[in-house]
Image 1 (cartoon, helix red, strand yellow):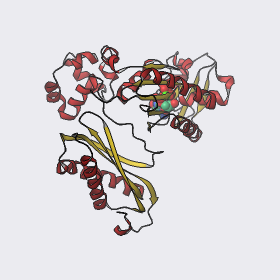
Image 2 (cartoon, rainbow, N blue to C red):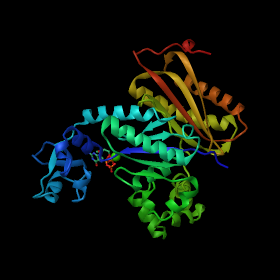
Image 3 (cartoon, protein in one colour):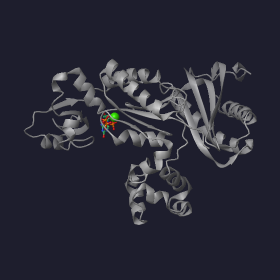
Image 4 (cartoon, rainbow, N blue to C red):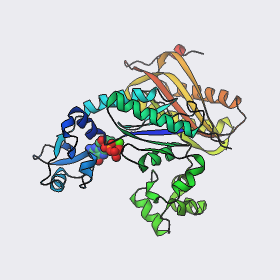
Length: 366
Ligand code: DGT
Ligand code: CA
């Protein structure tokens, strides 16, 4: 039996436009369109988002402002410029509210977050539904915003569940309902299936997620390569092992990858984590920061998740040190379990701005 996880996606409804409605309730009953004006001519630019009244006239994200105006011709509607800094402030406050309800919270964009609520709900999806209602109430009372919530056994299912009923929705998909829920959906509802992939799938006679689930995995790998092929196979069955990663206000850098085989062999793990460490280091360099906390995450063969971390007494920035510390953490982690590791991840956080000089290795704690 796989370990149970309860994952929730909270997605704020028509986010920028809803904030504008709260700032000025008198516009609430009209079409509201938030625009990114390019400044070239009076109406050049695109629609960032629109409230649901405007959407009922065919106005949506990404269309030219000129086209939106045409769709709303003769209708008393409101066009406003985007005010990103203000939306970000509201977003930060909402994320703080959400954090109080979650074990881990992973922010995904300005108006969405995944919450791992496994412990909080005692692995119980009925309790998760009630918690979802409680969260919606808190966000409404404290910020005046409505949101849509999806609950499932992983991020993939939670995300699609949240999209099922919008705005102001709440959809719970229990583990035994995943197949029934996923099966009839068109394949392009799965994350990562864009126009090109869905066209290729259609040529193969695969239109719905259940068509995909019934397709031979070897043939999928043959057509799409190992990465995408096995992803499609797993996703069609509602399988997703990605942990909800608490990135602490984007103040961390992390990478995770699947090992070439499930293993307890440290050399195989190191081969992968060395590469991850190099990616992490490249990002650290870009941001010009040193780190004080190193963490590793392992998704085990049975999909349970283990983490280990180490705090340094001073910030450092050294790729070989990062690699050896990650090795140590994995060594400990593997010793403390009898399971095989399927995916391995590396994370650094607690950043300190670099001042040109690298710290001594000796500043590293044992
Ligand atoms: P929803 O969740 O369907 O009720 O509607 P939104 O507006 O919250 O849409 P979502 O969650 O896809 O995006 C969140 C915010 O990101 C949205 O309020 C505005 C911005 N945004 C989304 N799509 C676009 C786009 O195509 N262009 C620009 N400039 N901004 C976008
Ligand atoms: Ca949204």
